Image 1: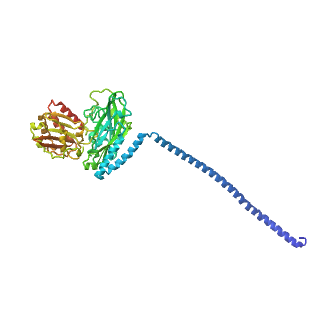
Image 2: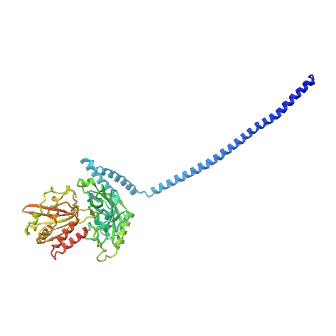
Image 3: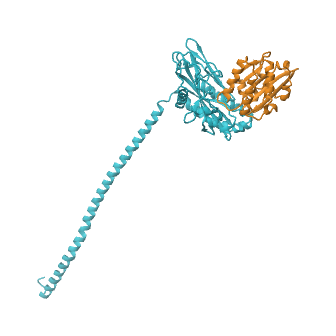
Length: 346
Length: 166
């Protein structure tokens, strides 16, 4: 530098100043431009991390919430399952099996006409075996069906519920169904208008004739069929039989299938435990259009055994007793209940 | 019950006129029955009657049944039955001849089967008319009206039957 001319030195200084000024100008801007994105990036990254953490946290909370709900749902289902399982006894297993068997039977019944003679015989054997299995180890063991007829036996010796009773009778509740739908008795058969008055909302009613003085199937009315039982010092079976039939007239005129669903219960009508229900059975009668065509009267079959009467059964019995002011176990009044004076086919 | 419970094959029916022509000695062995054949959830026991010279035999009616008709009420352990005099039987037949379905021996109804059976000189004679609701009522009343005042049990049984049916 000492050796250079002053002119050169001045030029150099100027260049240096220009550079510095430019550097300072551009460099400052460059500095700002360069440092701001870095911070922003950092901030953004930090924010992103924070956001992720929040999201992660939120997600975890949501997941936890969902997981919790899932667990609660599972616990609830488990409880429900347990609740359903708890009352399952040997009998309910049997009942479930009976439901399945009945379904199979119904399917077979639908195709019965298409079966050959040998298959029909086997089907009939199967039907008998099913019935025997249903009533086995119940007081109704010995109850049998043949075509549309049923012979019911109640053996107090085989009952788990029976207590001292001087007179065991049957109360039977029936429901008439046309192609699976319940029909009011008076619509089903024009002669049964009097039964409408004691019929429940789903058309169940005590099986009776209008001149009867009690709701018992095998009671003291002159046309009653069967014998009453006893379970005191002497043990005697209660028996009854029925031959339901539908002629496909009135309400069932255009039906494909007619079903009568019966619930028949042994009941104590006299003695120490008068008014008490013992065991019962469910059975049904069906007749199809094909049966009519083939001159068949339909089929009666046992469908289940029961320890307690159904709600519908109790309701129907109550309706009958209320209507005719009948009190079981009360000393009989002469003349019985007030009969319907109106003509039944009106 | 279906036809496989019938002991004998179906037999040809005799006309109502043949029964109407029977004399009092022949009517001693006549037996008749009224069977409800319509829709039922509970059986209505059949009412059967004969003269008091004869013992009722329900199996005699079986060969004269019509296929597809519900005779289940004939198979019950209870058959409400009574006996009357041959004179009363004669009057009953006369009175029922006023009902065209009975007179013609038609089986078109869906409510009540009226069957008669008698064995005359070894010849088994059967008759059936199947009546509708209204004709059945007329028939039961016609039969009841021919009963002597002393036939109280017969009247009670028929009255009870009428109440169950109508």
